[in-house]
Amino acid sequence: MKKYIIAFALCLAAIGASAQMNRTKQLIIAATKGWELELRLGYNLGGTSPLPLPAEIRSIDSYNPALGFSLDANVTKWLDVNKKWGIQIGAKLENKNMRTKATVKNYNMEIIGDGGELVKGRWTGGVQTKVDNSFLTFPILGTYKVHPRTTLKAGVFLSYLLHGDFSGYVYDGYLREGDPTGLKVPYTDGKTASYDFSSDLRRFQWGVQIGADWTAFKHLKVFGDLSWGLNSAFPKDFETITFSMYPIYVNMGVGYLF
Image 1 (cartoon, helix red, strand yellow):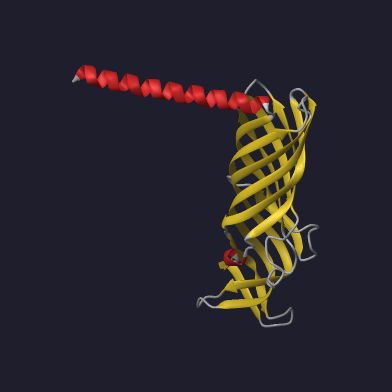
Image 2 (cartoon, rainbow, N blue to C red):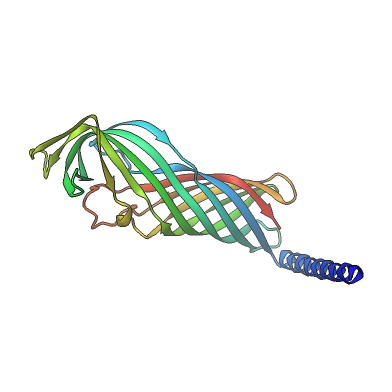
């Protein structure tokens, strides 16, 4: 029995080696035809913010980027024999997160009241916001190699929201129900009221992306990209937040070039 197990293991090893050789051969053939495959692991640092800050937001009191990782695969087709100009298409799973605290005045808000009811009005005081969004993103970029080790990239991205969380709470202030002259409801002495706009987030987002890659070793790259959303995180018919909020993130990490 032992010799059969050894023979079976050798057969599996031979099959695996043959498959690896075939993959290597295919990658070599693809490279000679101007194709490159790359896997990347990165970290997103940024936030979802209005630009410029509206008058209702008086100050940003704290900011935490939270953990926002990305994993993507990119295919580049070089358009000339010198591999100067190319087109890159990718697929990326990514998180875009942040935590903020802000002081606001007459800020349009919809909170959950003590009895579980929704109360709309104008909030003055502190607001803590949590954003935890997961996307499937497709970058479409033009590439230009300015140096054998350095490549610049620019183009657009298309994103689909897989999971969205835009929620938080208000504290140390008061709500004017309906409008700035409405009934005053105070939240002081540690009392808070939560809000949750997660179900109102826009599913499809798009924007521009620019970045650069630097080849540290034959197969290892270091990269940095800036993505700037051009449509708001909320649709136009969402009335609670009265200004547009754009996802703006820097993605940094390492890549493996096959």
